Image (cartoon, rainbow, N blue to C red; front, side):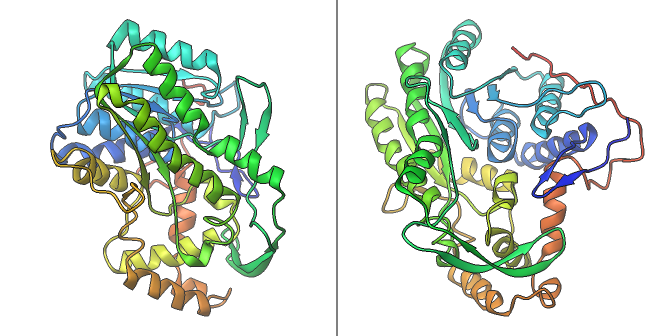
Length: 396
């Protein structure tokens, strides 16, 4: 079938297999020529099909030569209906890993469930024995706790008071004002249950109890802080509470891993275009101005550049991993530079529907958004008939 992007609000309902393949190959071609990372050998990536999780799997495999198991929850294709982009990304990753002679297997299912944890452990025992790096990169709005059976839904709200600021509809370029009502205590609890560190701890406990973690094993989860500009709706809002919990969990997991001399870290990453960030009011306008500023300064990074730098310059240097005063790895250091943030704050005051095309990078935002779904790659012929019913090799 010929596949075109079909939009509904902040979601694209279609994905392009050839475009997703181009996305994966581009990332491989970024990390592979930079030379071998003296890093992990057996890697488990939980949330491996898009964004930072996919980049982590690519850098582990094609940068460090590691065997990888990827866990994700993606929609399979059907006749006349495309799969989710993460499905096609994973199909492309498996294909490229096989060509490169790298071990790679994938598990599709609810990573929050005990069933998928057990299935993953069985596969590790059968094929790899022990894992020396666990990446936790889940981004789901809903989680059912396997112990209680309760389903929690996260919300994005400020805490304590209404929040009003500018935002942009990135489809139309219209800058407007938006107000968000404050959260309830129940909203906070639910968001922490979904996006906090509880499930990360459950994964590490399960892997440790099964004896499949290697000595000196590392585990890593991803977080975001951002500027004062977005604090009320992000870092000091419901999601911020969840990120606080995630970061606190890193210390608890480090205690859990003491007998293996293991360590847990949270990496604070840069703001990027994702399906999730596109739905957060204020964030698309901030990212548009940030992209413009960082590109002009020659320090803009996407997912693969961030994760490649994280592995090469932070995690696997042979030296102690550098962290901030709260024990976090700061790979958002270029975003948070004073000259970058001062410029973005200046542009924010000027941002209107009329000025944004000149002072922001809305085209770059739109392009990155479409690329999440496999569209807008210059080397893909989108008028060509493609097989939407693509399957993932080595899917367990």
